[in-house]
Image (cartoon, rainbow over all chains, first blue to last red; front, top):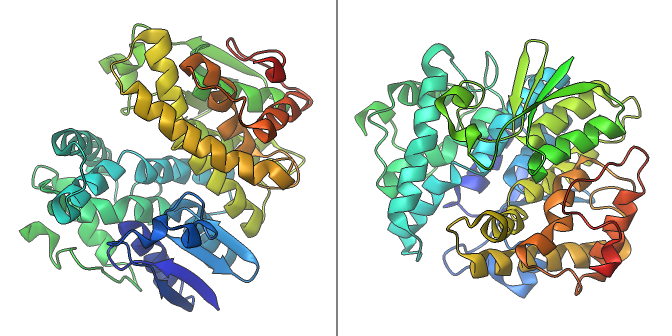
Length: 205
Length: 205
């Protein structure tokens, strides 16, 4: 059985839970106490020396990093071959958004940590950088339903949590109508599950 | 012919040049003036709204982000099927190091920009974070020749440039003997090319 070292509060862990649900793959979670920073302890460092969640174990394989884990899960368990399809061009298109989800959008994650857990980070700078990437995404989604291809991929999942949770970092998505529609489209994917903090109906945020 | 929007000074562009040389793929470069921040102009934004190098064009496909570009190139042009092999487990293992190369190691890239181009960034923090990831890499390489698999992959290339260039950001690699040996191993790969700033013999740094 797949084991996911998990925190319910972590948007990065949620990426993995969401993909596992969509792919109908069974798994068990081992709760890690993110609030007390259990992932920064020496004990956890044996699982992931970077001290970050999530970590996934599947048999003898242990992986860190939500984006890397999604690449693995999609190639291993996605019988539809659509979430990270086996073709160079689509893989490259998707990987661009894996990068965005693991980099620029993490500014919104940082703003959320300041607001929810008083992390000592520069809130205004994080919010400004989050707005910059949301503007790019909104422009990109003007004539597209999903970020990378004509259907949802792990590129969308990589960008979804901390975009949908932006309000928790005092970042309004109201200026980004294409993003709001994309979020509601994501919620319509068969197998979709939510997480605490993501509004049921995004347009009302 | 593949077009690479390129700066000779950019370690991220160098990742792509290095892989293209190793795979013996012909390409042409379009020089972008990184020092005058040409990549931040509205004209360049039409190629990449994130305002970052490199950008690659192959026929109708245009890709941003060195890691995404390497995934594409390896799947498309690597007849050996070793640089990003077509198998879920190895892909996941490699993708972890693509993430490290695009994230934690970029602290060393930031330190280099402070020292070379006077970027207004927190040098001490960047150096400390770079040392943290180099310690993890050095421990990881204690019983391994390459980062992800038993042979070089795009995970190694993703981490190589800003590690080998660390000295330009006043970050000494002397404490990391396993990294120094890994760097010299990378230099032995058939088709290897260097870039300005990477010492010819790493052990002498």
